[in-house]
Length: 248
Image 1 (cartoon, rainbow, N blue to C red):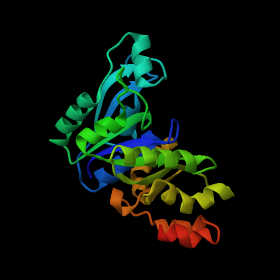
Image 2: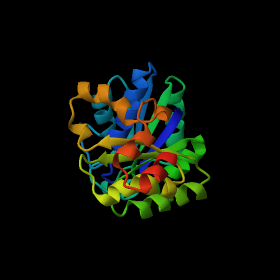
Image 3: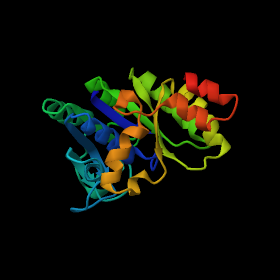
């Protein structure tokens, strides 16, 4: 996978847990992994951030941050209010390249969605991904309203000439509603990319030991896992969507 940018359709969609799952699956394959959080917001002092949470869940990964801002805002706004320096796409790309030189896999976890601003020039995670020529992994919710923001993110990726590796459902309930089940077929169409996994609800609350063993079961082979999209669709998607989802 080399360098992969992990973004979401918005905040609180499961990016950190998805990043941890991909990291855990990669580690299980014997690969070395680094996780880069360019801008950690909403965390101050020495409190653990998202990169540290990935390391806690996944295991022996190199966790790195470039900037940290105390307020839970877009990085550019959080930096301005805190009177701190912003982090731009060139810095992100340089840090990722250095990590890639000594790791098999580098996962860059963004803040919020793809077009959240990182600096006063309006630079975004998409600009950093373009500099790195990295593929993008999109984390999306399963329920009602996800198709629009997924399609908009896909259009933004296309506008930046970026390739979407696939979509991960950030939280899949044990008893999904009809919209969630239908979206197993609709999400890949909205994204223009395959569905590459579904993380069970509250996966991040599992013990690290349980998480590491289970993570490959949540991810498709493209991400180092054993998850079968067709079998998952047959189990959950309602007719006639099950066949469509299985072929996506």
